[in-house]
Image (tube, rainbow, N blue to C red; front, side, top):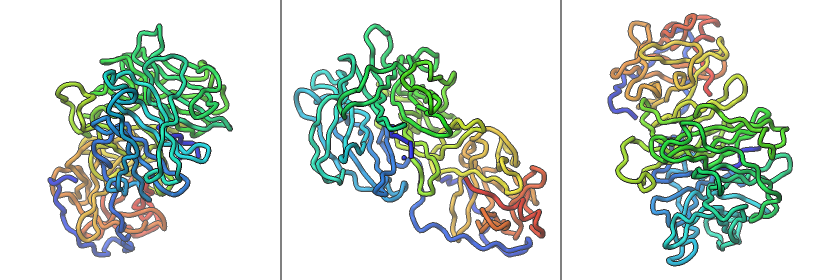
Length: 466
């Protein structure tokens, strides 16, 4: 929930790694990245994850631990490095009294020249008496500095509140959070107000949304975990809804960037959830997200989810909500397209031929084509093999990959074709060379492997990766 205003299948066999330059221009092989690949889940058993890239060049991660008893921070120069980065415990709950209950949903923010950690805490003996508190660090290093309690955030009501986030827009520091408002029969609604200090609001808040839609009230009536994204002339607030099992999902609020954010009428709510559990990819209960950018500056969605649907007992005490990331894309109207939770493994890419801007390599069922379609049908993993080759696995068909059969390209569960990934034959992007020397390309939207003998064919065999 961070401010985002400029913030392998074992069934697949490799069919061969040799690549002779028989298909026209031989491509120059792309060097394999030296760093460890970015894989999902990025960090296991870290729920409510906040990941952001700070001005010091580090990626920071914090989140809820299964024991709900402490606050942690880790950092890395790369997103992938967060998986193995040293984790510092910056604070532990007291054994008695206030703040001695459940510790949830921390967020780390650099405010007024110091690190601040916002988090929700219950009391010993009343673990669900959740209120929002702030720690402040005396040093510039969030992992080693001395942290102390600054105080409790003053909200309009002395009631259950949590999941606060902070963002800056048009010179104003904004505070957005979830709270149970007296007189409204929900578990939590979303609120927004400008901040006066790290602990106080500058004016009474606006109520952004109350959970009333069927997908917001499954199990519990919940709107929580706001995450702010400012893009394309709009302010987007993603939020989580319903119970924290497989019904947990993301909704989206939208306002014009020039609108009065304190006017309830400035905001519209998505009529349907924007991210839900996926049987195809095997991710359940995706939610409590944040936003960041990757090392290339591309927008990234961060969220947690489980690898299974069935939960024994209270889902709050199932420990396996894992931190996951995937690239965030946009629809033609500029609104974010969350797609589906991508599942375990490499972060998927999209591949657009240079001669068909706006069209993508896509898989629907067993058919492979180039064209338009739902985001998830256009996302494929590049799974590295020995000798610098890759197989291409569609995210909606785990355990399957592209296979060349007599020049045609299909999706199969075995004998996947190992492509040699080379520099794009058209002078940019990438191309994929098959073992027989031909290249993955399209002919009027039909995906084949063939010779790239002229400029037209080379353009059809070159893909821009996004």
